[in-house]
Image (cartoon, rainbow, N blue to C red; front, side, top):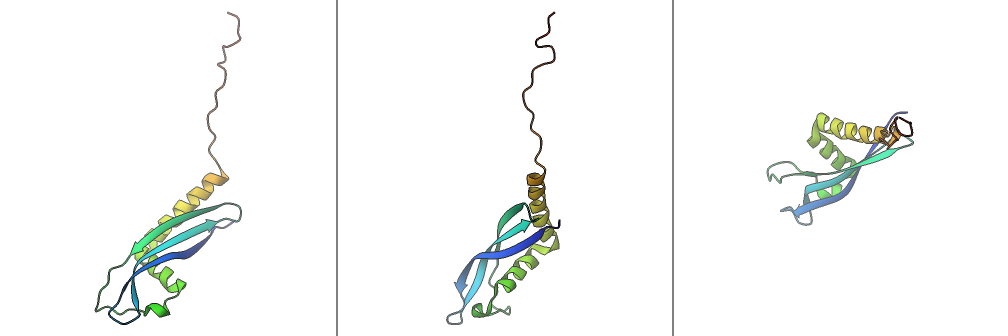
Length: 114
């Protein structure tokens, strides 16, 4: 079964922009949840942004979850997104195929008469 990934925004931190009643997002706290239909795993992260006055900004009131998640994924880059997904896949694999732990056993010579 294939694994699906759900990205969500948990919290935005912002500073006031020079424009009245608008904000510039400085930090995005996000969660990525992976599930294969049986097992799931969660990754929590945060991405910081720097205010650059001359840059073009999307007004805060026009932001959507999809826009903010796209920012995070672009900031992480393809390698960063793949790293998160690989980590989650490893955690799911660990749940599906837990390692066998050693257990104490009697030595083969115990109980033998010598």
